[in-house]
Image (cartoon, rainbow, N blue to C red):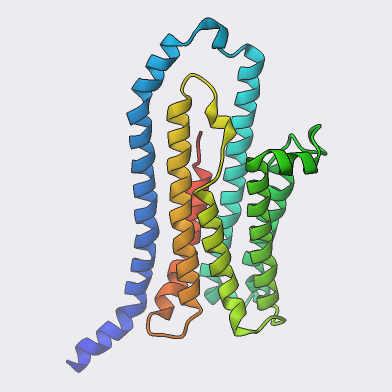
Length: 263
């Protein structure tokens, strides 16, 4: 019995790592299945709607080009944000192994969030100044989607700055460890109400909107998992090491979902 206990004790970290990786894999597989199912359910309906659409309602070439440009911009924004999130998760996973050779690695993952936040804040809506003719005041007060994008940017910047201060040892209060989980839950909840105007036009708009909603639902579920696992990783109890591994694994899963986002 003693030898069996010793074997289990030695294998426990490996088991925790396997379980921590299994949860993100399940999220990736389930999100892919949901997106495919939604697209298949609505393709036939959209084809019928497109065939019955009056000629005067069809988009002209200029509108089609604008929608295509918006689609590519939106996908690129999601992909680059996902890259930063994956990078943050990888830095967290690697920190235990390389922090003695590279002590500043503890600053790397908060900086990924800060970079992502700046990108979303400035480039997520190019119809705003300085890229487009609209003022920020008009965009924020007349377009809910723009306002939501900027809220997401502020959440990313807030998490990045907070965790950077914690990594520097400036912020040591116990409550500071729960700001990230709370912001993650807030951002994930906001995704349930996220508007996406680009998918509301075109012959296959119903299938596009269903696909967009299914993908954002996956982002939300991953975000809730990240918030919960981060909070438990900050809590001293038996399963803390498991959640310390699960948290970055879920970050990588969310980043991967963002990097394969398609409208």
